[in-house]
Length: 197
Image 1 (tube, rainbow, N blue to C red):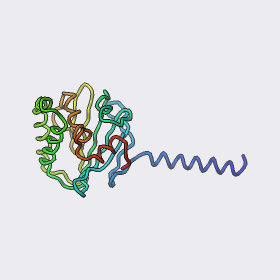
Image 2: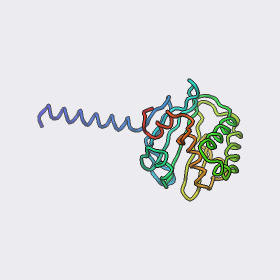
Image 3: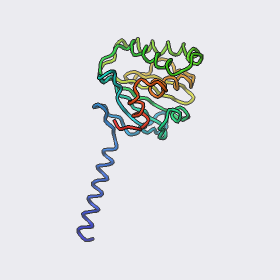
Image 4: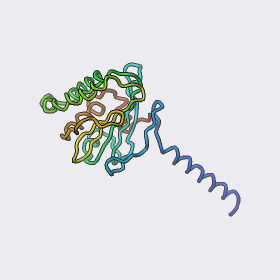
């Protein structure tokens, strides 16, 4: 094999190795999100990840995992398979306050009748966060949709109570970040893969 061609092939191979190594994780504010993960036997891909800002402060990072890419809220909600939203705190926050903010975010993105049906679940979710008192920088929690099981919330890697059975509950939770009145428009775009972290 002639030398220039051999060098070109070696350079290309080295580039491919580097690219695949870079594709292992996406880093958002020093928080690493894997490009893929397995949830209940299904391989999920990172759809997007970003930062939740409150005024100028970074509050947390979030990454959305789906079985196939989705660039609209409707597509995310329509997917039938497992889904995961993973959140990692960037600053200390009162967990009870976070639970209240999530409840308000759900209510803001639903009509009153639909929200009223979910109130028992909303109260239970608020209690989950209240029980933890505080979340510190680096603490994380996940919200999973598992078909046939429901919505599973895990804080610091530990599943909290029984699953929330209603599919509407997971979609209502996703409304906080992906609804018509999201907590942070830039984060919504990032989770839907429309902007880079």
